[in-house]
Amino acid sequence: MATRWQLCVCSLGILLLAPCSLSEKFSLAGSPHPVVGVVGQDVVLPCQLSPPARLPSMDVQWRKIGSGFVQVHEYSDEGPQDVPGESYQNRTELFLREFSSGNVSLKLKGLQVTDDGKYQCFVRNPEWSREATTDLRVRAVAPVFIDVLGFWGQGIGLACRSAGWFPKPELQWVGKNLAMEIVTNVTQDRENLYSVVSHVTVTEGEDNGDISCIVRNGLLETEQRSAIHLSGDIFPHVSPWLAAFWVIFTLVLIAAGACAYLGYSAKQRASLKKRSEEERLLNLETERVALESECQELCERLGRAVTELEFRRARSCMVPVTLDPSCKHPELTVSSDGRTVQHNPPSPEPAALYGALIVVGREGFVSRRDYGGEGRICRWYWEIMVGDSLDWELGVLSESVRGRVRQERLERPPEWGCWALGRSGGQYHPREANTVIQSWGVTPTVVGVYLDLEGESLSFYNVSSMALILEIPVEGSERLFPFLSPGHAVGRDLRKPLSICPPSDWDFPQKLGDGEEISSQMGLEDKFTYGYNHTVSSGSSGNYACVYEMKNSDKRVTKSHLSPAKHLSVTSSASSRGGGEEPTRTGPTMSLIIWAARCALVLLLLVSAPVITFVLEKRGLPEPAGLEDTHVEAS
Image 1: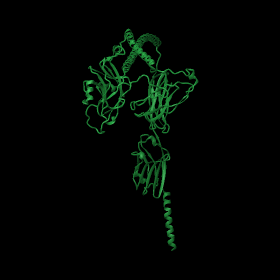
Image 2 (image 1 turned 90 degrees about the horizontal axis):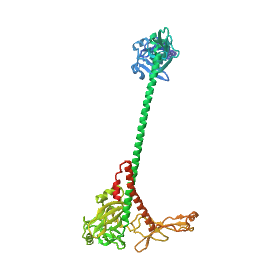
Image 3 (image 1 turned 180 degrees about the vertical axis):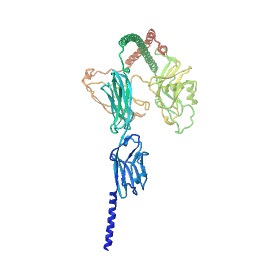
Image 4 (image 1 turned 120 degrees about the vertical axis):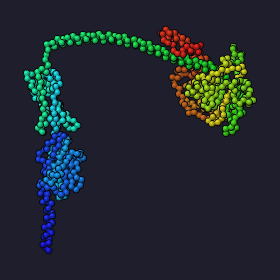
């Protein structure tokens, strides 16, 4: 029994000591000295296993040692065999046939500058592992060339250049009569290879001999050399004719400079003269353009003044117009004051309509003698509030057509005996009126109608802009009556009325006194603006408010509104400028003065037009287009 235990212990000791003895039996050695390789060539990194043997299940790894380990090549008996590193594809090779002799060296092909560094050889099997390191020094050499640069100062310039060295090379010039100042530049490219360029000046001597350029690689202890021989004839010599040449050359330069200066002066004078002439013409052109602009502006102002004068002349003939309830279509409703008309169909559903939706005015117009003065009354003007209605028609018709309306026998307005301006579906008719209004971009809300029997014309105006919309001829000798047609009450124009505006002095707003009332037909205006006259005195300071009331036909107040109060403060300075005197009011006298001033302005513009034409003719400038036509129209 004791013998068995002794045998077991001995066997266990042998098993435990076997790996130790095997690991102590083998060793791994690299190169004791740095291995030097040349860029572009192959190099072998030695690694020897001693004693020579090929162990079972052996792995061999080559790694580059830097900030970490970079895999160069790996070999394994059991896994993937003979695998190069990622950055060393097709550039590494192991001597597999020499593994039996212990040679696990690595062959590195196509050496690069980046391959410089320390490499580790690592060998292992399941029982032991060994490693060894080898330093690789990469070097590169290149040919040397000498270039002759030509004359530099008192000698010949030479340049020595060479590209493709590693590590940084040293350059040396060897020869006689070399200048003390030698300039050498060393640069490094993307592949970490160095290029060197050096310049030197060689002066003339008795015997210059050969000039050599030597570039050395200190690590390889190798050098590249290039030499050039300079003879004495290549150096510059001073010729006896050189002084005469320089004198003649200087005189020629002076003469050429004088000729160039004279030519330049003449050219400058000509250029200055041309520039002054151009500036004169430019000033004349600028004056002409400015004068044309002024004339154009004057013509436009004159045209606007004439248009405004024509409108004011027409509006001065404003007369009151009311509608005749007995001369209308049955479905039309006329207000009690005879100024508003609207369509009230018996049913809100669309139905066939018989007859023209027309209401005729009470007043008829015919040329008659003015018994209150000289001449005849043959011009009338009134205004119609159309708002934003899309379907309406207004104008004048003859007495015979009025009779047909009264008898309810008029199906539609006739072509003869009826002169009108209308709107249907958003388009105005006649077509000329639609063209004019569309060019404005503004829809008229109040239309002025001007009947001139002396001139046999009917004119329509946009009251807000005092612009003429349309002028049509009026023929016949019958009495003419104003008429309105509000159109069918359907869609968005349902129950939208047409209203005749009451006569008023358009230029001068109404003024109110204390407690005074102003009545207005409801729905005719979007906004009322009235002034208020109050005699200012020292006791007038206080709060003021505006009250408006809405009354029915029985004069009973149905709605009222009080505006926010405003405070009026009267200071002493106001009293000193007028005290309690009543402020001047604008009345008929002031209206006549303003009219006289406007007429004088128009006459001034008419008189200035010939003067401007005379000035243009004296200056020899063309007359602006449209000026002559303006003279004719204005006269």
